[in-house]
Image (cartoon, rainbow, N blue to C red):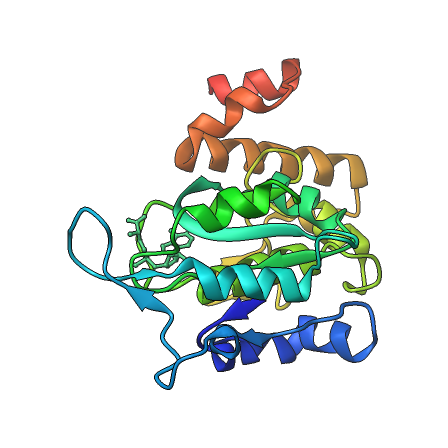
Length: 238
Ligand code: SAM
């Protein structure tokens, strides 16, 4: 990953991803873009052609960074460029990226990166311009933290229990429903009886129903992508 604020990416050394790095399951390289500048001020930005507010990142340091980290003669990474103008980052894209042997991330700042950087990189590697959502962050670092965490936890061995990501929200196209742990009653609020029944089929049906209800209430557009059977349709028609 390349950034003008490499320290911003330090949280990747913590918690789940940090442990996966320590265990050799994930290899992380964080690089300061300014090492590919050649003036005393280590300048990476300039004003945009055509005018307008703000500054843009100049292409030369980015070109040199990519050429150094992924020489054209060798194997190529898949380059992820966070931008609000990108395609939405989803769990499906996280799964797709988790299958790649090598990802590279380019963190924009200011008003973004000169567009020729992506065009040039796309001549020799797969480039994904990816958006975290319909809002504007100050830089790509936070987006990279999000993407690396979402992708990293899908890699073999990173999560202790693989079933936990198989049951996550979005894995079956639906939001995950409510979940409970001990105690059985807390502040006069009991855990739903079915979860204490030990009846696995009934628990699975209850979870599916709650998942459907929650998705209908909060994210109804997701339902159009999900295969629904008769029992599902009945719940949604309630
Ligand atoms: N001028 C850009 C635009 O309107 O599309 C916004 C630039 S933003 C201030 C600076 C950087 O933050 C971007 O280059 C990108 O790396 C990152 N960024 C901001 N919002 C983002 C989002 N929703 N998803 C992913 N990255 C984002």
